[in-house]
Image 1 (spheres, one colour):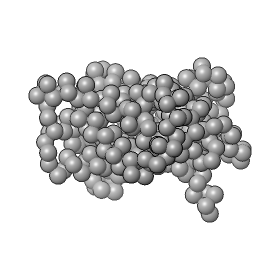
Image 2 (tube, helix red, strand yellow):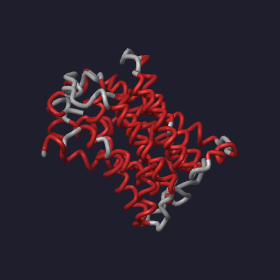
Image 3 (cartoon, one colour):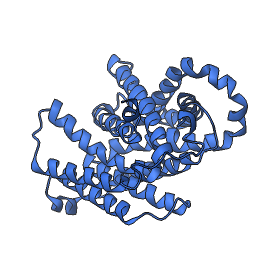
Image 4 (spheres, helix red, strand yellow):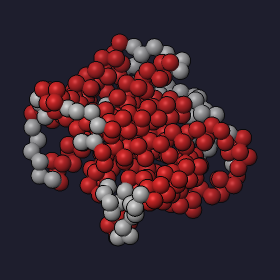
Length: 312
C-alpha cells in the first residue's frame, strides 16, 4: 500500500489539484485590495516562515553545501519563486481566464522541447501523441465543445505574462532533474523560498509606489495563508519529487489536469453542470497522460542525485 501511495504518478496528481484551486481563488481575490505582486511576495515570504521551524537545523547542517551551490540555487529560485508566480498573478489580472488556460497549455510542450534540447533524449512517438491528445482534450474543456470560439480570441498582455511564466517553470523543471544539491525536500524548498522572495520585493515596492496596497483584512490573510501552504509548499514539494522520479517531460503532462480539476471544483461547489465536452475532454487528457507515461511504468526509478534518499 505504501508503495502505491508514494507512486510518482499519484504524487503528481497533487500539484494540478492545488494549482486549480489556486487559479480559482487568486482570480477571485486579486484586486486593488490584494494586488498581484503583493500576493506573490507575501505568499512566498509566508511559505519561508512556515518552513523555517521545520528546516532551520538542516539549513545550518547543510550551510556549506548551500554556499557552494549558491549560483545554481539562486537560478532555480529566480525561475520558480520570483518569476513564475509573479507573472502568473499578473496574468490573472490582465487576461481572460480562457486565454490564460490556453497559453498555459504550452507548458508540457515547452518542457518536452527544453528537455530534448538539454540532451534529455528525443521524445518518442507515444509521448508526442499523448501531448497532442491531452492538448485537444484541453481545448474541448476550455472551449466548451465549440472549437470555433477560439477564432474570436484576442491577444492580451497577460498572455505574454503566462508564456513567460511557463517558460521559466519549464526551465526550472528540466534543470531540477539534474541538480547537484543533496538536501531534504522541505529544506531545499526553504532555501529556494529564502532566496526567491526578496527578489520580488523591488517590484512589490514599485506596485505600492503606484498606489496599490494590501487591504489588511482577514480574508486577504487567509488567501495568502492558503496560497503559501497548498499551491506553494505542498504542490512544489510534490512536483519536485515527481520530476525527480519520472522526469520533467512526463511530469509536465500532469499540468493538463489543472483545468480538469478546476471543472470538477466548479461542478461540485459552484453548481455548474457537467457537460459532454467536459467528459470527452477529460477522457482525452487522461488518455494522453497514459500514453506519455506508458514507457515509464514498471521501470526502476532513476538513480540520479535528485531522486536519491527521497529527495526532491
